[in-house]
Image 1 (cartoon, rainbow, N blue to C red):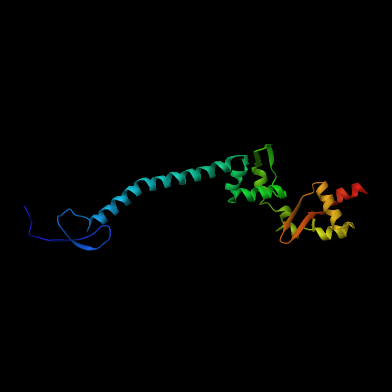
Image 2 (cartoon, rainbow, N blue to C red):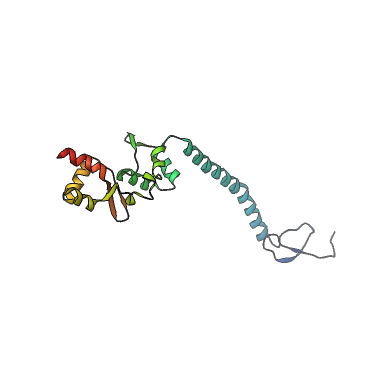
Length: 181
């Protein structure tokens, strides 16, 4: 049985106007029909997977904030940095870490939080009068730069770099240099 009427429809995939052969036709061509099928298949397995992945990521961040000790990978996730940056911070002494074995390094949450604490309520260590530049320390204590670096290295005195200057605590140097005299 054939019909003598024409149905003008808009293709659901490409949006073009076409004359449909039946009243239930949704697409202008086989090509548009196949594209729509592929999109529906893709949506059926990609969108749920993205939701699961987002849940996993948010779950691990919640988990990381509750732990007392973190490994390097967890610390990097928590700080939003790379593992390489965290290891550089450990090597420079800005972040305290403990090696449990050759492949296991743990960092206390207190030490991570201490990265963001400012000493003595000042806006930074470089503005604190208890800290001085390395060159100033050499002049104050009357020793050469190389001797100062050697004293700091031998006694594991903490130092930090801010901008192009390296700072050290005057009190730590006084303790070490007055004991040696």
